[in-house]
Every structure is written in C-alpha cells, then in structure tokens.
Image (cartoon, rainbow, N blue to C red; front, side):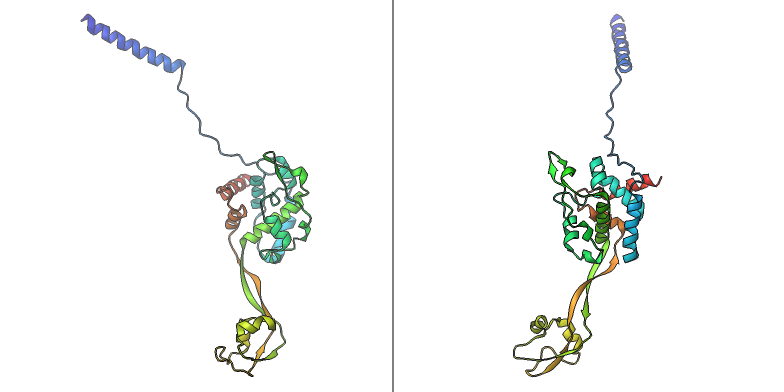
Length: 256
C-alpha cells in the first residue's frame, strides 16, 4: 500500500513539474520568414510614365496600365533609393543588354520607337557588392522611356514580309543561273522573282530567257502583341523566377 502511494505521489509531482515548466518556460515557436516587402510607389513618376505610354500607344494602339509600370519600378528598385532615383526601370545595369540593344537599334526595336535619346547613357557598374550609380549618367526619364520601350519589345510578335519597289525590270538568264543565285546581285529576293514570273518554271530556266523582277527585300513587321503579363515575365530575363508574381502583388497593393 505504501509503495503504491509513493508511486502515485511521484507521478503527481512529475505532472506538477511539467505543468510549471510549460507555464514559466513556454515552447518557442519560430515564425516563418516574411516575404520580401515591395514598397508602394508614390506619384512622383506618374507624368513621365503617362507621357511615355502615350507615345507608344500612339504608335501601336496598345498600352499597359500605368499601375503595372509603377509596380515594375517598385520591384526593380526594392533594394535601394539610388536605383529608384537614377534608373527606376533598371535598364542600364552592367551585364544587362537592354540598353545596348535599344541604342544599337537591334532586334527590330526600331519598329517599337525612336530610342536615340538613350545614346550616350552609360552602364551602372557593380562595385563593392553594390550598383555604383555615381558612375552612370542614366536618369529616371530616360530609364522609364527605355524600360517601357523594352517592355513593348518583349510584348511584340515579329514577322517578315516582302517589300517591293514599283518599277519592273528585265533580266536575261545566263548559264548556271538560278533565282537564288541571281537575286542578291539584282537587289531582290527569290520569292519576289517567283511572284513576278508566275508562268516560269524556275527549275527549267533557259539561256537567253527573259524574266521580270522588282527591287525587293524582306522587312520585319509587328504582327501582334503578347499579353502584358508574358511581356513582364520576359522583361526580367529570367533572373528572378518570381518576378511576374512580385510585380502583380505590387500592382494589387497600389490599386487598394
């Protein structure tokens, strides 16, 4: 009987000790890390954004919303106020190629707009684990114009079409001639020669045969537009897999 009582007493004391420990020393729960906070962008760049969007909408008849651009700026410049002040759309960072392409008129960007205002703008170097904006002459207005232009470039669907001049010329076939061989020297394309000689079999050309041709070339054209969400996703170049999601979250915050 005494041993049974002693055992029960020990159990009671053990229970009381455990309860006291939980009261005085509560279990510590580690909180989940908070997601990166994207700042809400003020209205400081609204007029620049609006003027730039009006320029591109006048050229193409399509336009993203202002708040989408503001959300992109918020995500692009979340790390530093210098980025917001000097290059809010981050087109001039060393290692990125957006500024180079726009200035050199590459990748059919001449169809998007006139980016001559970006000539002379310099890249921002990476020094001491930070972007050194003191070594770049990029400014907010040029950055926003170039950034929105780059977004349009990422949204554009490009193709080619044949552009022919009006005058019709004659050419006399020589030995060994093919449409592919003579087209460059005539300033035209094999497609154009075929188009202007519908009754001629190009596989059975005869020496002395006269064919017609027009000066012609293939030119790039914009045939359509992808969604702005897809364009935003590609704007970042794959550096941040959550880029689109962060931009859309920032846009929702702006629109609250």
